[in-house]
Length: 77
Image (cartoon, rainbow, N blue to C red):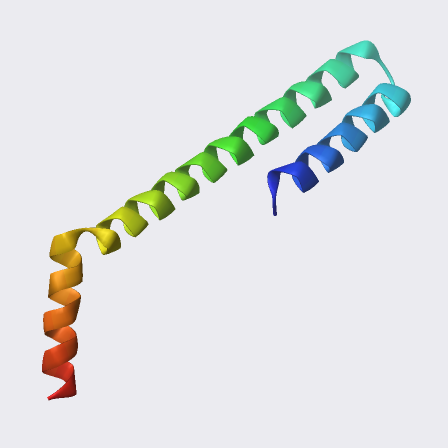
């Protein structure tokens, strides 16, 4: 799920909480849960992006390209 889609649904959920929560205390608690959920989602996305960039950098490194070339030659033989 992309961030924009998630944030759109989060905003709608927050509006529903403001509109339909039975009390300010309940609304505040629900909004805190939504805030924590959003922070967790963003942290997960940042971690996945970091892993993707790290993996890409490893595969693009000259040593990795030489290793892939040698292994490719060995597999072809």
